[in-house]
Figure 1 (cartoon, one colour):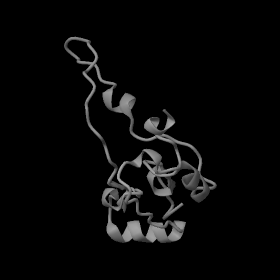
Figure 2 (cartoon, one colour):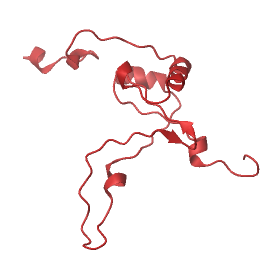
Figure 3 (cartoon, one colour):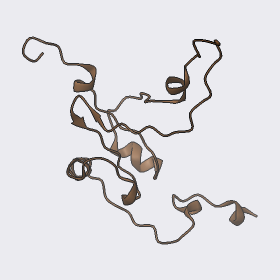
Figure 4 (cartoon, one colour):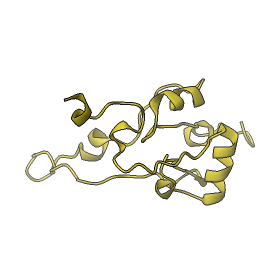
Length: 122
């Protein structure tokens, strides 16, 4: 409680979601986090036209959370160019998680995480 008021969900919740990268490394970095889900297709497309009663056409968009309750939201990617949010917050969280940037200079990422590409299997 703050000033006699309960904190809102946005004030107490912290979460992560893997967007890309090595899933085994991601799981090792995220102990103690519980599974949850973000803004998804159902939420953004669950509309019915009031005049016709027909369901809306799904939107072809990506929604990225920018802030919640006045606090910056960030996305950390294995591609430094895809990080989003306040740069200082991104760097702070990376440091707290022990996140290390890993460069990939070998072009095709089909085998980046140790998986054999379809061409190599043949």
